[in-house]
Amino acid sequence: MITIVDYGLGNIRAFLNMYKRLNIDAKTATTPAELAGATRVILPGVGSFDDAMDRLGRSGMRDTLDDLALRQQVPVLGVCVGMQMLAQGSDEGRLPGLGWIPGRVRALGTLAPDDLHPVPHMGWNDVRPQSPAGLFDGLGADARFYFLHSFYFECERPADVLAVSSYGRDFACAVSAGRVSGVQFHPEKSHHFGARLLKNFAAL
Amino acid sequence: MLRPRITPCLLLRDGGLVKTVRFANEKYVGDPVNAVRIFNEKETDELVVFDIAASAAGAAPNLRLISQFAVECRMPLCYGGGIKTVQQAREIIALGVEKIAISSAAVEQPALISMIAEAVGGQSVVVVLDAAHAGPGEYEVCTHNGRRRTGRRLVDLVREAESRGAGEIVVNAIDRDGVMGGYDLEMARLVRDTTRLPISVVGGAGSLAHLGELIRACGVVGAVAGSLFVFKGARRAVLINYPDQSQKDELVRASLVQ
Image 1: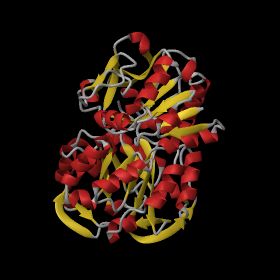
Image 2: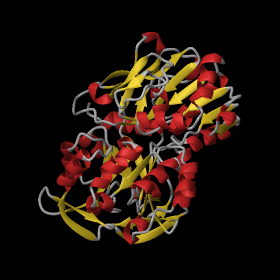
Image 3: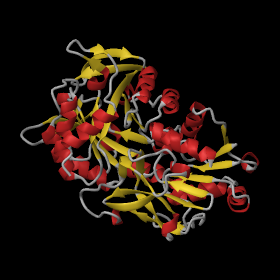
Image 4: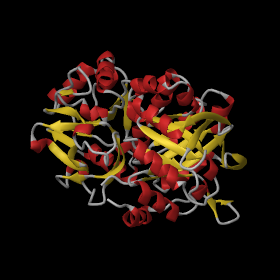
């Protein structure tokens, strides 16, 4: 079943509501036992990088999560800070990330250091998928999603960039390596575009 | 392209949805949760909910009610009203609210802005400044639903909020509230030129053309409106409405000067 990692951060219930409306079973996990056996994993997150890594560590679910993602190759979707946690580290904090997708999280202010691009990047922006299949299946040229972030994922390998968005300059708003993916925007708050992406994730 | 946000604003009192004119003459307009459901169907860009009873009476935020909104809302939600502590901010974010708004507390105790930003992330901290005209090009910030004048200049408090780590500034033109004659564009431009943060403007929108005027004046901005999306017609009949995606795209295309 789709299992949402509940380590105290992120809008867990918004994901549950979205899947309920899609008639797809989903549940939350707050313990390793609840997480084990997941066939899809969503890792949400809001706030700061170190706080998120620290809470995930204290939740006791880190080892189970590693096992699911790395050994069992279960599809994982990181959302917002949950996506940033997939990187090796972040300029926002000092703790190491999960390191599942090579790259580092950088400050948005370095992307477009001008007055036309306030930080945080807040609101609805266009998303350009690099591949029309998988997570972005059926999401065409009018696809737009809600963003609320001050940092972005800088991929080491261009092939890991799944979709780009533009804020002064292009940045990776979705990343993917093997069966692990991440999106910087909030699909759980992006109306029918987000519903489609979450439905696609359930079918990966 | 990042789009301007077109955002309905709902005012609450005692769990009911109300609408004011110049922060007074309150009218009951219905059940807020029902309004949220309609705005879901209309796929609004965001939703702002202010509990005006909590902010004025000094009451604590109604967590049960906020939780109901967070569960219902399929768009990003900003809640304000009565938030005075870091703990309250944490609790509300944990309920699934994307952004929390502080107003009186931010003016009286600016250190609270940085404390909350540290706890929940600056991107989720909105500082709402209610302002009234105080001479040519000058605006004074008021608190407690506009009843208490602070003697502080709007631009000074905008700068203070930015330096303390807020993620967004919302300015509310008291003189324009509920009047539906258009935004105070002078105030909007002043705030746009004062800060590098995202801003939203509320007070005065009575038509989609007014939203266009604001976008033309300020670029990528949050155009917030209460009456416009709650009332229909000159007699102010309650009818929840909101432009569809093609209307919004056309409005942005016609108004946004890149």
